[in-house]
Length: 56
Image (cartoon, rainbow, N blue to C red):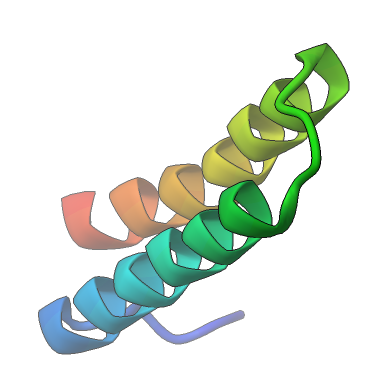
């Protein structure tokens, strides 16, 4: 069983995800559907576990 995230860890993880999204969007030649879909999926993979961890 995994440990729960505390609030500073969750905030740091969200900030790193935002930085990664910014870097991807700035370096992209074109913002199209697959890029947006991958960002949405990565957001779900980041935010759902954080929400479940902080909800407990």
